[in-house]
Each structure stands twice: as structure tokens, then as C-alpha cells.
Image (cartoon, rainbow, N blue to C red):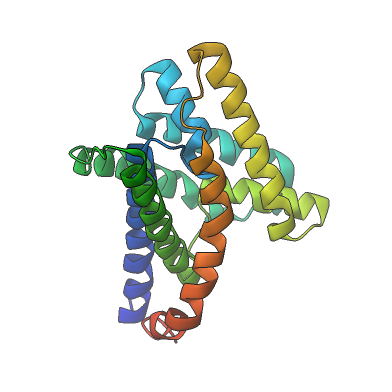
Length: 214
């Protein structure tokens, strides 16, 4: 395998680790998780399963939805989402263990940690976008819906994210009696991660792409 191909896959795995680290930091901030993991996080609180285990269950669910929506249009390489989802699930539990000592006291410290987690996730997303290996299962669902509806990904994503958050809120209130994992941080994450990625792209797109250009 060529060195540049190896670089691409290494960077992709690194992107998954960084995204999971950012997600874990947002959990520790305790101001609400990003739309990406708010529903799995709430389900983990309800079921007492680890966040990683629940995310793996959602991975299978997301891939099945894609197959049902796209049928023969589901690319064979996207079956790699099973592997990617498994790795991401492991990284979530692993990074939660790594940051277990992080327990911010006071709202200001929680808020600063939340902002830092958004930056970390944005860095991971930047690498994920650049490597273009395979979709994360949650993003794969959005891509499938956008293809079926013949709408652009950016136009579909906000509606899917909002639906996930609404479901998380309903499940949280019904089964927990409080809003677990869905707070102002969820909205902030949804609003600022995208713009941060765009800013980072201006400065780092070219240096990153040179690592695996043909």
C-alpha cells in the first residue's frame, strides 16, 4: 500500500479519535451534548449501558436504515461503516475513561470546556472530511435521506439533527424525569461546530491534503 494511502487511513482513524474525544469532553462539561451523540447518550442513561455500546447499537440501526432507503444504491464500501462504527464506539468509551478526571466546577468552567469540546470536534470533522474514507453511520443516514429527497446534505442535516434532539428530549423526560444530555450546549454545538470547521479549512485544507495527494 502506498505511503499516501496509509496516511489517509491513519488520518481518518485519528479523526474518529479526535471527534470521540470532543464528544466525551462535551459529556463532562454537563451542559448538553452535540446532536451527534445526544440521543445515544440519553439512551445510555436510560439503559445503564455504556455510551459506546449504545452508539454501536445505533450504528447497526443507522446502516439498516441506509440500506432500506437506498437499496441497490447503497455502495458496497459503505459496509465499512460497521467497522468504523465499532471503532468509534470503542473510542467513545476509551476517551470517556481518559477524561474521567475532568470535572469542571462552576458554570463558567463548564461553558469553557463545552467550547473547547466544540473546537476538538471541529478539528476531527476537518480531518474526516479531508480523508473521505467512509461516512460515519450517523452522517450516512443523512446522506441517504438527502439522496432520496434529492436535497443537498447541508439542507437535510439540520432537520435530522433537530429530530434527534427532539427524540432525546422526549425520551429523557419520559424515562429520566429530567433533561439528560440536552441543554444549551446541544444548541451551541449545533450552531458553532460547522463555522469552526469552515474557518479551519481556510488554513489547514492544503497542508492536510498534501499528506495523501496522488
